[in-house]
Every structure is written in C-alpha cells, then in structure tokens.
Length: 304
Image: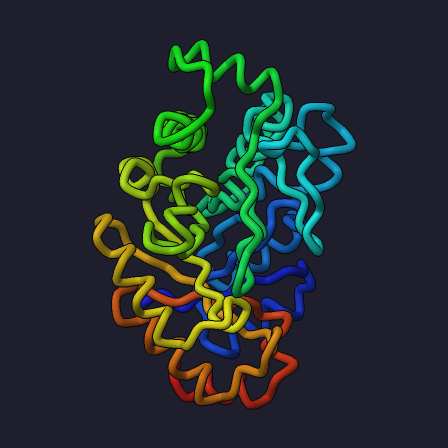
C-alpha cells in the first residue's frame, strides 16, 4: 500500500518527519521544487510526485486578458474565498502550464506528474457550492459553434464539448510524458463527485469525464475532504467505490485540517480506513498541518 503525504513547503526538515512517520511517497507543488529538496528526497528513497496546478490563480487573470471566465449572464467569474478559477479556453494559460510540465519532467528526477485544477471553475470544497456555468466569452462561443455546428451553448452538447476540452489537454500531457519519459506516472486530482451530486455538476460544471480520462491517466486521486464538504467519513469509501469502476488505481486525499470542524482522532482513523477499502494507498493532506497535531501523528504511527 502506498503511504503518501502532500507537503506545501520545501523545508528539508519535513522530509525527515515524513520518513520518521513511515511515508514512502511525497507530493509537492511544482513551484516548490528545488534541486536540494529533490536530492534529499531521493536519498531518503521517497517516490516523488509533482503537482501542477493548471486552471486556477488570480495571477493568471492579471497576466492574460482571456483567463477570467465569463458566466452565463456575461459577468466575470467572481473570486470565491481564495479561489480564482481560470478559463480552460485560454491557450496562453495552457501553453504556459504545458511548458511548466515539460520543465518538471526534463529538469528533475521525479516519479509522477499530478494534474490539479484540470477542470472548469468551481469552488467545490464546501457543503453547498455555488455553481457557475462558464465560459460564455464571445471567443469561446465562436469555437464551440465551429466545433459543434451549434449556436446555442445549452444541454449535453455544451457540457460534453467542455468535458472534451479537458480530456484533450490531459491527452496532450500523456503524449508529452510518452515522448520525454514514459516511466513517469500521470495522475489527476479529481473532484470526488458522482453524476448524482448537484445535478451532474461533475460533467455540467466541472467537466471532468472520468470514463474518458481513465484511458489517459495512470492514477486517480479523489480529493475526499469530508469535513470541508460536511460529509461523514464513510462518504470517502463511497466516493472511492464510485471511482473504482474506471479501472485505475486510486490514491485518495485525506483531510487533516480541522476545517471547518474538528476532525477527531477516531474520525481520522475512519477516514483512512474508508480510503483503504478500494484504493492502492492513501495520501495524507497535508504533512505541514498534521505534524502540528500530536493526536493525529499518533494515529499515523499506529496504523503504519
């Protein structure tokens, strides 16, 4: 079983903490990679998977005029708390992120690339997310009409077209990996919704088509943050069971932060056990937080 954790910092001391707690796999954001960090991680025999966030970030809104999506009424997508969703039809954004992925693969001794925010916008990590259908910019609508022959962006033709946009980007990354280093794993941080959630928002709003994506990725990582979504820990098992139908190994993420409610040691144990039922392993999200909570550290020691 894979025993993974996500680190937000490239603090070298965190590597020692991860090793001492029995982790064998690390996730780190590509912006935090350094030669010194990767050298030490490999010296400690960690598998290293690198997260690349794609369609998110207010900095991209400021950098590229077409990066901020438009909603159905023609208004710019609002920021929701920390989240600024980016328009996947912005080729300027995509070209920048594609080069980021290329540079990570060619520049570092890594084991996997995990795509994050590879979707249309939604701040989903809450109990009742606000769902915005995007992108209704004139340029996007022209492309939609050219691709489909339809002038009205409605119904299944509209959302399936948007799903195909996302799938095609993942296909490009798959091709890049096959070209540069075929042994590199390709993973996807997946929104843990089924078609029954929020009137099929996983397809209509977020536009992640897991059946199609399963032909391209090596691993799905459902982001099963149960407390943020105000779900019981058993929901994690239900979500992983749903993803198991797509025939790929699962490496779900388990929330450690007491946000917006406390996650007790018992709840934390149940979360891990639920994730393990259908998965190839578990990713503790995140190490920087969990080491500040002695009771959760003890859970990890006992389980692993």
